[in-house]
Length: 472
Image 1 (cartoon, rainbow, N blue to C red):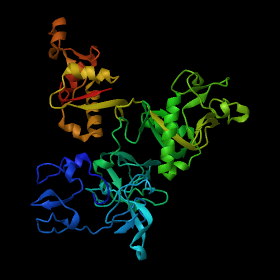
Image 2: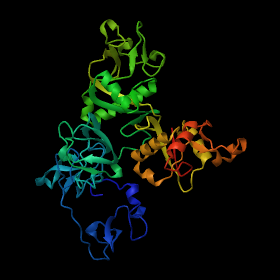
Image 3: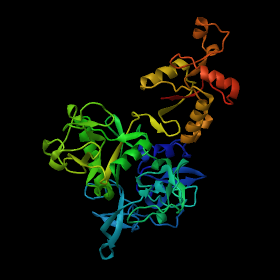
Image 4: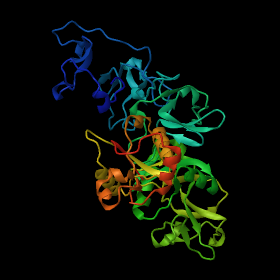
């Protein structure tokens, strides 16, 4: 592409080529043109293959911008004896964070030799369908005391109310303060291309995988109680480091973030989810009953409770913090002090937290064939879960609302859950009398409350097998 980035496979799948196929390996150095309304590979030199009339071209009235939002690229520019008319691919000799780069300052007296570089803004970061359509996404940005490094469904309204949108969006850079990155809540927004969605890494949006866990690192400084409440609202807990492997991988993640974003350099410490045991120098993780030293610890100078007065930490007054750099050592500190914090999702990888349900949920789509009931049950069990059950019509309605809210495209799929009528299960029907229309959940338990609700309330949407299933 003109910004030096590669076209994603998703975009490539929609391209209409005159040849009926994409570019072959022997055509990788060619340019792309429109021919009779379709894309066609052509020679880049002179934009002609010598046999056809030289092509015209289409210019867009905007310069190629840089990721710092402060400069525009200067073309052409010369670097190491080669002239570039567009962004250049990353090179070991250029500090561009392995991203395409351009010149933002050149020496015109020396054939436009590169003097100062900039990292090219990816055109796939341009938003669409909104007041800010056609503008680059203003990412990263700060909203509701959280930094967003990708597009998001979360949104804070001007009156302070937090909502969740149906589609991923981003703000216009004009509404994002260049120094604090704070979004003004009233600025224009646009929808995002899939390229800028949160990565599909098996974790909830804005969480990142570390070992078998999912974490969200927040450099926004809060008291222990504030940090704990935020994490719990997200279906998470304050971080519990129970192994050396988790500690080392977390350290690597923090080092990477500090190199990429300057706001991760702000906190000196991060809150973790541990408390001292009253009347003892030992500590325990808040969500685990065992002493944390029995699994793994990383106290500064190998001294338990270092950081507290006379190394005597008190339950209800002190909590555990981790140094934000270096060896990432642990210390005790006063609960009312403000530090960064790290949330650890209580959902295992592959499952996401659904606020409405208060549960960890995995959504799986049927492929070419409908998913059978035994296969659905088997798959859910293999993921460490079970088909989601329901006791009442209200529960069923809540499941439906939550799924459609989290993924609007789910409306085009049937829903399979762990709730079955005797009449639909032949094996069960042979074991019991078919006279009574009983319902059982995916554990084989009777759901008498649902029968009562179904009689009185008449659930107005179908329950049964389909191409979509939910596991919890």
